[in-house]
Structures are given as structure tokens and as C-alpha cells.
Length: 105
Image (cartoon, rainbow, N blue to C red; front, side, top):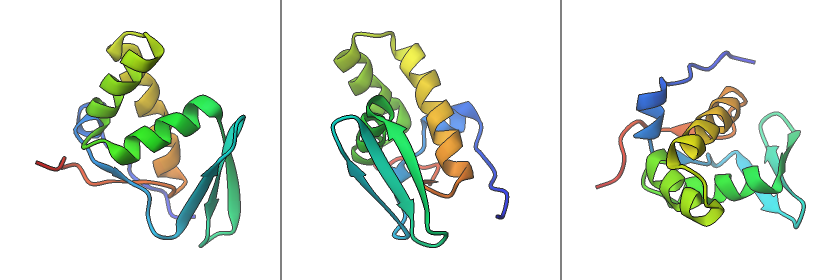
């Protein structure tokens, strides 16, 4: 596997997250299953991480996703931002998401 560069936290928070075409996922009540079609590897996310992935895909940037999730989970946005950056870093390293570094206008 080719090592992937993970953006800095500030860069990641401003990035638009996209699930590439070679990745598919499906959410179930207790987990989200993510499949990399290029490698054939399945990855399991707990229900919270699955919800985060869905919100990351909808939001214009990671920071916007954190805002929505912080309100939903009644947590401080800074805590959610940290959790999202950890999740994004893990998914980026596995090639399951892409971060473009420039949010949509």
C-alpha cells in the first residue's frame, strides 16, 4: 500500500471530504461497512463514526460537519473537531476518503 500524506489539523478542518468512486459504504443500525473496491478490503465503523462519515460527505468542510455533529450530540465543537480529524486521518491513510483542501463556496 502506498503511504498517504495526512493534512495538518487546520488544513483538514478546512477540507471538503469526498468518498472516492472506488469506495462504497452502507450503514446498518450498529455499524457502517466500508469497502475499498480496489483492494477488496472491508472496514467496519461503529454507528457514531458511520454518522460522522455521512455528515462529512454532506458538509462543505470538516469544520462545518463538526458544527452539525456537535449540536446533534450536545458536545463541544472542539471535541468533535478533534474526533473528526482522528477519523479522517485513519480513513485517508486507508484510501477510503479524499480531502481536497479547499471547501466549496
